[in-house]
Amino acid sequence: MATGTATDGSGITMTVTSTPSASVTLRNGEKIAPVLTTGGSSSSGGPQTDSNGNQITSTINGSVTSYFDTLSSTTAALTIDTTNAASVLYKYTSAANTTANVTASYITYNVQTAFGCGISEYGPIQNSLVDRITLPDNSYYQFTYEVTPGDAHTPHYVTGRIASVRIPTGGTITYTYQGGDTGQGIFCADGSTAGFDRTTPDGTWQYRRTGTSPNYTTTITTPIDPNTGQTNTTVINFQGEFETQRQIYHGHAVGERDHLLQRNSCKSLSRHGCCNSVLANYRSALVERWFPEPRGYTIQWIRAGYRKRRIQFWRNYACPENLRLIWELQCGYRYLYGPEQ
Image (cartoon, rainbow, N blue to C red; front, side):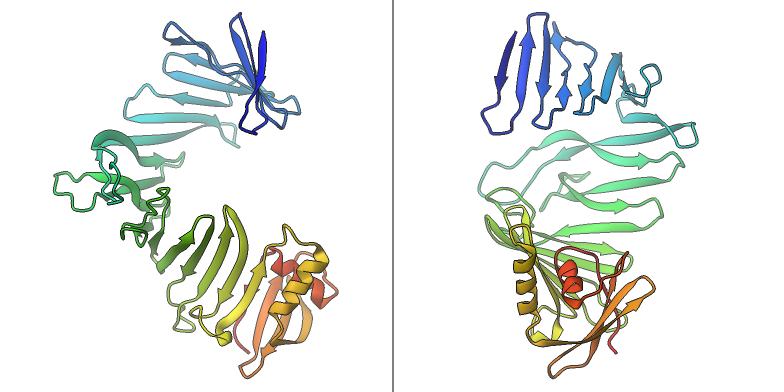
């Protein structure tokens, strides 16, 4: 038997024996027994055990893989059937104790990128991409994919990025990719998405990402609000993968008049320090009064020289002081702003 720890800082430990057998232990204590392959055939999957002793095991019978959990070692909690080359059938027991089926259907596309980043493009190559996901009630999701820029083939080649999603209620959401280093919605340094427009039956939402690693800013612009006749804007700052600040504007993200709210991340701040930063953000605003509502609280406030506004904070429990209420909002709680008063 031999045991070793990964050198990438993940804390993963691997143990192998001459049986042969193998196990992988994650940092949190979860244990995984991976499927072993000998002579081109795979064995049944070994148990996956979490730190509480709960297990998931699997068996493979031809093209059907069955998964069992701690509550049942004889009746599969999930089966995955790949008998049909064009679809995958998932079966599980519903809340009504009946068998429920979900089918993911695939279509083969010619995939070819053309992002113009000065490096080798992907493809052309044939890949099977998800076409439809049919739910137990026969409603479904339907997917289409972005046509490769400048492509003249029939049928068109695709980049592999989603162009539209038809949701089970019948609506369709479409995506077009914008910005980036070459105007194709991509940052060439790492291939990440720079921006896209998301069009729903209610209008178009714009998502734009700017900056350089590790400091990025994502700006979200809503469709036109039928009540105000203008769009609203949210500006989110990131340090690596972590959000550090979120600013919400009633209208475009310009001018002190439109600034409704600024929320700072408190991951590295004490409660007192975060409150200080919050109050600094409200330095030009006067909190006039606050009072309880059936489902939360309302703060009514005035920014010097502009109309009075009312912001509603939905809370599940009483909050007896303004400072605490503002701090909770700023540090990640849900909020909803109401109409101007």
